[in-house]
Image (tube, rainbow, N blue to C red; front, side, top):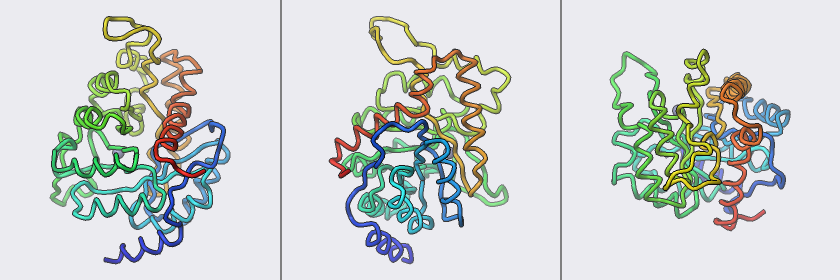
Length: 302
Ligand SMILES: [Zn+2]
């Protein structure tokens, strides 16, 4: 029950209206994947990094981190956007979504470690509620860490496969869905479902760009369809690599991945000869457009 008190304080503090991005020009960087669990002093360090990079950080905020994060986001609306970290199996999930929305949060995530498959119909009321608020969803996809190998846990990679996002993206066609980690290691399946769903994107945070560092050209075989014309793919479509958005997956206050993740993305994209204008979309342009469209759809105040 403690968190309800915290929530109430947070909502009162931040006001009940949704907040819009204060920035009017696209930033150089939008990082869709920055965890915050109330680690002391971390938000200030993130702010410094984002200011230096001309970036916006999407903060994935737990209940523990909520009071501090919601205040900080409202103080720095040109640098931070809040996403609510909910659990699909939490019986209070719908109420939490309402409360995150009331506090101006614009998405949910990182959704992970569910007891059923992500696309299980029992979770559909959660996605309906998120869609009602025009929220963006960030899902963990692929293999997942074992925090304490001595403890039994009800977690399986199989429930979090990237392919579990295919039905969700199709069933809620206006909802933007981001899969973290490009389905590691099922990159090909992740990219192929994103190819057919204009509302589905992936980030490449995690170990994949470390694992593949000796063979970055491999990703040309994953994002293969740039400029390809076929009966179902008319000319003029976006570059295949534009299914990627930037995510650093910084967590537990360790900010090193903010810079290291950007460096690895750049090295991979350069190795794949991805044009600069497409790289600009990956690092900022695509998410900027999505956030602008969300702002219009939700009628968020400026
Ligand atoms: Zn993850």
